[in-house]
Image 1 (tube, one colour):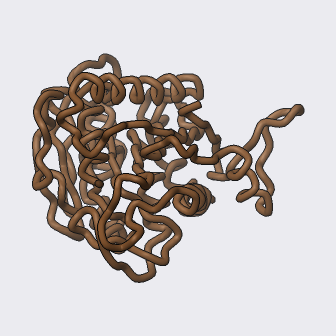
Image 2: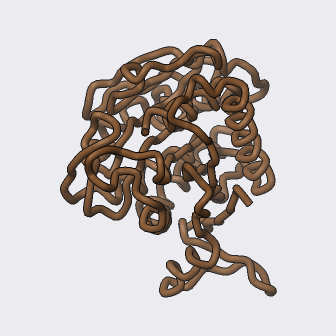
Length: 325
């Protein structure tokens, strides 16, 4: 199976299904639960962790993740020459589900915004997701060992978030910031001696203020990230435009792109599936990707907020994985 699911409760704690229903995993069993459920297979070339966003049911989260995986497979099979480092491309994916449903209203938007923030700050999501990433990192062959050249025998770890799910990922990565770095892969030094190391982070239509990286996620430059933080945006996204503007008095990243950040922000447009992303386009600490010509479909209160399941998104994810080599 290429897709494994874990579920979080409203406090951000891990839950498991039992014969009598869902219950929180006891703290002393957290690692044991990961061992029982999450063993990266030897055949996997890349490990993906996906966190969904607002208004996503458990079944919809599963369908969305499968669709994204299908798009990456189709894109790679159709244009393998664009990804010379991905020979082959065999991803193994962990879907993190959390309670994100609400009324499609301003009150509902604020409720889930506050829940996503509370799950990671006052709650347990940062610790649990950070623990998950640490577990996966400890059990994958290290692409940067031996420390002379990143090789293609290892397994690369990539994070993908959508909407409020991006906040949960950023909190988890920031949670792990703190010890000292050293090298390889992207031009950003690779951290060693940390809970985990992430090779890339793709944030699709992030539901957070444009200055979130300068005011809230300020430790990301010191966090265990080898590759870039890449965020897409589209002005057809009403959830992070219309609703975010009313809820937080400013547009969100998913509508207007990354504003300010602790490091310079590179701005590029989303490329079509047949045009290669050069390394220089993505090899920056923060990359803001204009998807306004791609993410255009959607009706109702959210607009094109969930129009990210496109070949162009698969192409961007594959390009990040390829340049991680």
